Length: 209
Image (cartoon, rainbow, N blue to C red; front, side):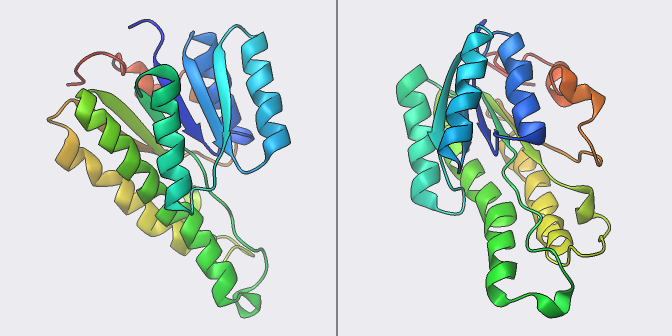
């Protein structure tokens, strides 16, 4: 397969956007998702201008119906799902912990933890049926160490990192691979081309060892 189907959540800025551009250069068919329609449509247009087949789908990963619809629409549009990059995340409400509320705390967890779980759930639903695929989940260095003014970010990325490590132990044998990446403070060099974990094997092959 020379044109893998790639789904990227949180694709509108930063690492997600750079990932979409990298896959476009490699000739992938790409679905980018996010919560802002105007920016998403502009990105899809840029990817098409670069020669890629690309679509934007508005999605809020905090809501399972949105995630289910995103994955099903991707398969309906392109016939399969080969690579998923779960990049949707938020730093949460900035400020000291004394100014946080249950709502700001939940909003961060719902995006960074629940959103990743729901994305993997529905991506694996498709990949297990087709017996191939690869999922890469993005986390943050804040999951290792906190940062001033980001009291929700560190605890929201700690369980997220754990959930991203577990899937490979269960799903590796059916030819579906899952990895997690921990980017440093800016876009690392490996994302200027295909991400380093994705360069080690043909992720869209019928079987990933």
